Image (tube, rainbow, N blue to C red; front, side, top):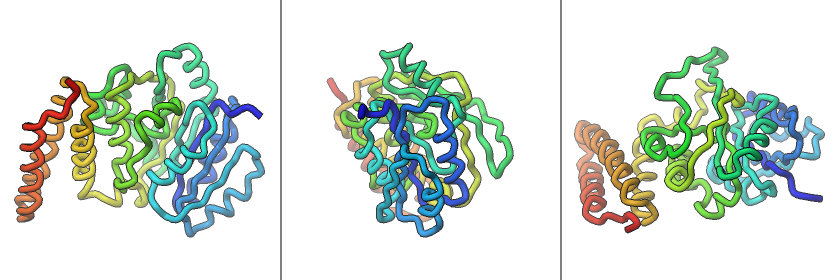
Length: 284
């Protein structure tokens, strides 16, 4: 049998409240040339029972020891047979025509390898208005990606060979792994925005990654920026932009560390900035 066009990957951990809706949103797609890989990151709730209720042969269920969302996504990537990868977080869902419309856009725009859609956001069941700075970017969006994670994994479809070139998700990061990933991608590739609301996100629940590490998110982003700056893969223009963003984030973090009298952290981030300013790791 030929490989599917899309591999849809759902990482999940103790999400029995949302998982069924996410899976149904994939199985109800109008475009059917896909496989659905569900990676259970060691759930101890009724996740397995929920998956067993589905009889679709498109589903591949994988269970692993609890190692985090990056590991779960990477596990799915290693098993994926599709030419394009579509991620879906287990508390999000696709609109019925998500894959069909994306397929049409891929066919009409073969020069692009990364696509994403507009999103509808809910928080605790209520429609959430999006701010101007949440506006979805298109084209060369590296500068957008430095400020915040401007592309949602659940909204994105990515050609598989990008992962072979740039790697998957950093398993050292318990959160902001998507920020780290999109920095690498947008430094190399333009992004195609499908101007339709095809992804629905459900937020506001306490087990979201950003809620688990409220005081460490900037620390994770600094780590991602440092890694990128030291990669020797950025052109000079992008290096300067990334360094300026690192400087901004470190300055804020240092102020907080001074207030908390964390002198070792202050020295670490001051030395980090000094070393990167002197070294200039960009591609000449």
